[in-house]
Image (cartoon, rainbow, N blue to C red; front, side, top):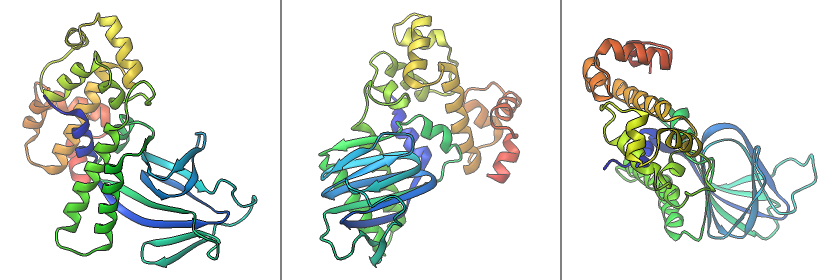
Length: 297
């Protein structure tokens, strides 16, 4: 059986861009805007607040790990932040090591923070299938993975980039596996946690070239068509056939960029009877023809 979660992370192609060890003391705060990329944070010692735009503050404590697959603005601060209008105090004490707040105050928070880039050409679609935020407590494996990533980032050993990309993929998958259930925002992870919907999602990913319909997917899930349709849209966030089309187009973009197959073979791999039918569907979905996309991606 196909593993949809592993495929999504593999197509995202996350790569580390920044890894920092952060200490903070006294009253402090720091904010970032317009990132649009993944962010993670592992609290080594102490407690602080993380506020993501549009969400209530989250209390982070030692042993906590947070992953936000697509973040645009956030604030981290002490429980008693500085007065309004106070400028953030941020000092780089060593390469990749930062001190926040009063440098003379005792450090009461230590955190490992990382920002990532995503190489996928359909990162908006792929990120939309993942939870808005993953907050794990006491997951030692996640903490160990973050430490390994940070160790590689400051080193210059051979195969560094390959190791970093693999470690980051494992970090994403491990963090996402720790989430799930009804409390997770609608998306692939929530769908895979649903005992009825999981077989249908795996069928879509196992054979994207096969003809598939809502009726067939409902039968795979042992549900009526209408019950399956409503449940899929509620748990995954989009109607079944919209998900199928989106996934096929994500695969097509990846194949076009890698240029490993002619257009007719790509069309067959993702379930279209001819190159012309695929070209029409791709142009309608993406806004440009497959050839233009391949040349400009």
